[in-house]
Amino acid sequence: MLIHSFDAGKSETEWRDWIDQGGKFGTLVVSGETGQAPIVVPTHFVLQNDKILLHLHKANDAIPHLRNGSKVSLSVIGDFAYIPSHWRAKDPANPQDGVPTSYYAAVNFECIPTVIDDADGKVNILKQTMVYFQPDGGYATISADEDPYGHYIPVITGVELQIVKVDAKFKYDDHKSVEFREHIIEELQSRGGAQDFGAAAQQHRRLIQNG
Image (cartoon, rainbow, N blue to C red; front, side, top):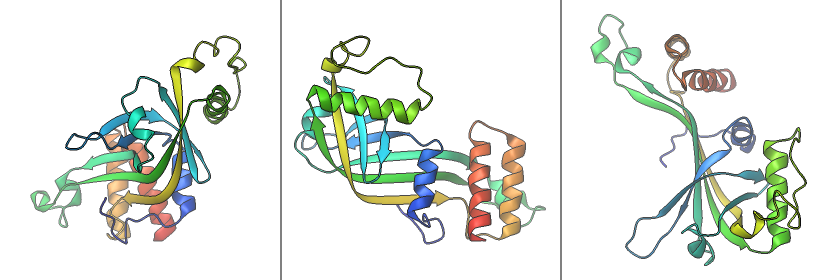
């Protein structure tokens, strides 16, 4: 992922806060057989300090490749929006002179995987997942010996990813003027698409944070 100095994550806290506030779903990318395309797996995950926890069905075709311990990637994107050309025109009188772009936040993790097959390990991952995603509770006891989770444990495989590198990017025209970015924020809020408010919020946050 190409990262310029102006759209790079400014700190570990920045990307961790972004993950915690909603980017808890990513794409796991695992090398396949030689000459074949990578195996791509959409998945929720739990971020814990320097590791990531997740679980997959035991029949998932990524599992055999995870077992060899080769590095994998987990890519998380969000708060994305298409910025049309006329929004970015230098002169409002000549809107056709603008060039469009994409806004987005992205965090790419490079990791070393460990596959977890034992029941206790898988129970622990499920417990951590539920605490992470359902902190208010409302779910049954997670145990390998009793339902509803007892019959589920044997059909899943746990995965622990040790984070070895993180690339974080927040692409929101930070190299442009304050006035320019305020204009784009207004346009995004006015358009009100599915991701527009999130993109506007990120651009506003970066504007306040970085000037």
